[in-house]
Image (tube, rainbow, N blue to C red; front, side, top):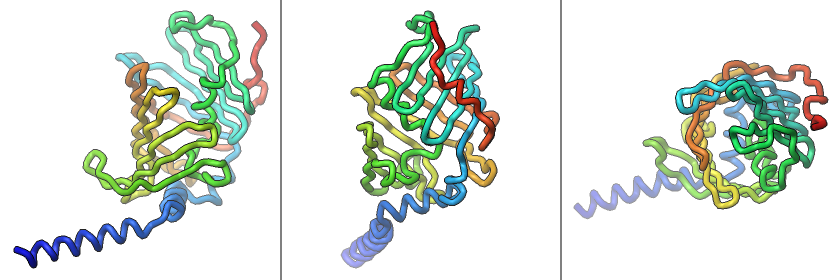
Length: 237
C-alpha cells in the first residue's frame, strides 16, 4: 500500500511540475497562437459583427462596429426602439430606451459605465499584448471547470477592472471570464469557435449578469470593412 501511495504521489508531482513549468507569458503566447497568431491579429483594424441576443424567449438583433483600440459602437433594437452604447477615445455616450429606465435621448456615460466598456475596443481580449496595454496577469494554477482542465488567470486591467479568465488547457482558447465591476459579478462562457479570415473567434457567448442571463450569437463578422467615423459622434438632442 505504501509503495502504491508513493507511486501515485510521484505521478501527481510529475504532472504538476509539467503544468507549473509553463509561465504566464508562455500560456498567453500559446493563447495568441491559437487565435491565429500575433502577426495576423495586428492586421485587423476594424471589425463589424451582426448578432442576435436571445433573452426571455425574444431574439434581439444587434450590431457592433469596432475600430480597434479607438472606438466602438453597439446598437440593439428592442421592441422598435434603439439601445446604443458608444466609446470613442476616452469618452462615451449612450441612448437607453425609456422602457429600460433611460431617457431615449443621447447621454454622456459616467466613468463607472465606461470602465468595463473600454475592453471592447480590443476584440481579441485583454491577454493579447497585455503588457503593452498595461494590464496585470497572474497564473493562479490549473482547475477543473465543467469537467475540463483549465488555466486560471487573474487579470487586473489598467482601468482597474478585476477578472478571472479560464483558458481551455487543450486548446488555449478562452472558455470563461468572470469579472467584477463595482461589486457586481458577471460571467461569460465562450463556445462555438469558428475560423474567420484566419482568426478563431467564438460565435456563442452565454452571459450571466446582475441584469439576468442571455445568449449572444454572432451570425456575421466582417474584418477590415469600411467604417464611417461619424457613427461614433454623439448626436444633438
